[in-house]
Image 1 (tube, rainbow, N blue to C red):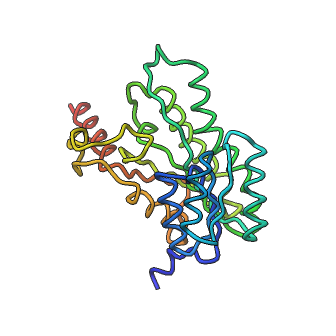
Image 2 (cartoon, rainbow, N blue to C red):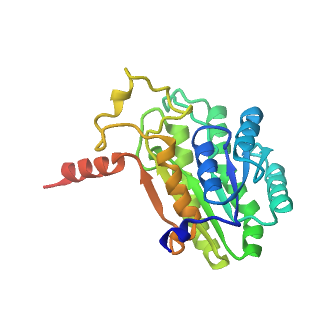
Length: 259
């Protein structure tokens, strides 16, 4: 059946930054598809609560994605508890806005450490376990700030542009090992990372083709698609889930360059 391709029964996923927001939505949906979940985060109370909600097939691991030893522990916990590791969702990320000339080099480095070096360490850490299992799917969460220049986003944008490049290289190198690597590019999604939305501020996104901001539950199904066999011949792909923001920018550029 068609829906069988989306089943994750018998598979195990590590999801970083899973305590709340987008990561939590991903964890809930992948668990509903039959997947065992290893939820990692530095927010221990919220992470534990999420795993208690999901049930016995969910495990929380306190995890700083910038530490290589922490990644080794996550892989060991996943394989010793559930016997295998099939999926990695590199969702953990931090955000900062500052003009380029006012940006602090230390803060810039911290953004890169979490948003880019963290996924790099994660890909390296899970590759062997995935290869031993005969397959793997890595889903990296970039951002619309990683496909267009946004004022005030020199650090965050650099990290998300870099993550796209890392994904492309990983897709080429890990494909022969049976490991697929794809990228999701969210737009303006209502999470704690974004400036809190209210009825008076939500109008900021009325100019988008779909006329609104997005919700975490609109990103999670795309993560499920990429994690599952429904995308079995897809690697190195980038899927923008942004309400049409990227298409709007592209069409504007085309008009401006027309003779």
